[in-house]
Image (cartoon, rainbow, N blue to C red; front, side):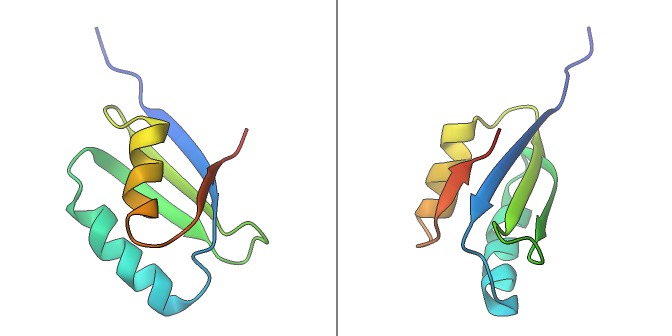
Length: 74
């Protein structure tokens, strides 16, 4: 049986290129994350993460631990 990939979507305050570079170092180290991107053009700086293993809460904890805000979007 094939795992379905969860696509988790969050509003963040990752606004600048420096913010993005910092968070990309962190997210790229997480082998549980298949793919991620951030839309800094969007007012909510939307972060999308594809992962089979990480929960919404775990991702929020990762982002919050680096002094960024992260709120789930529906």
